[in-house]
Amino acid sequence: MSIYQANNISVVPIDDVNNINVDASPEILSSKTIISGEIEVDSFEEITHINKEKVDTVLYIVIHKQPSLSGQNAFSFTLDDVPDIESIDKISIVSGDVYTGEGSEQGYSLGDLADLTEQKIIWGKD
Image (cartoon, rainbow, N blue to C red; front, side):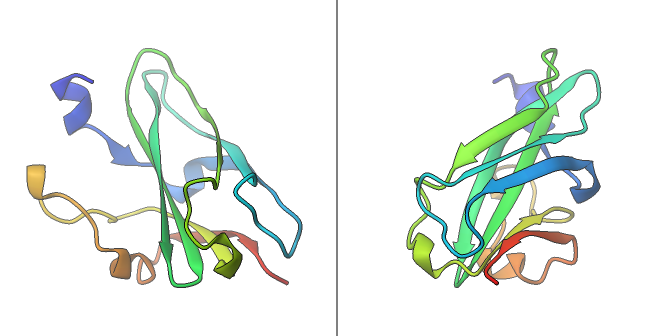
């Protein structure tokens, strides 16, 4: 990854996430559950990575994009690296001002994810 790309990674706005699908029954998630979808990207952007953060009983999804020539806009991932999947009650995509700080100090607190106003629940137990 070039320095230009690393400095220009951003969180995808919720309104730019389309056709999201959680391949799970209404009650049961597993490590093999697949979450897939598409994002709207400009002609010179692509999905760079997706963070999966579990806080209490909620799994937060943060989708990132970066400048690129490829224009990759589809994503698909499993929950195989998420701990204690059975305790998840809902899955939410978050965006907006997720990060605080600048440069190498940039990051986010897991506790702050629940307070973000830009969230969209994509799966929940009935």
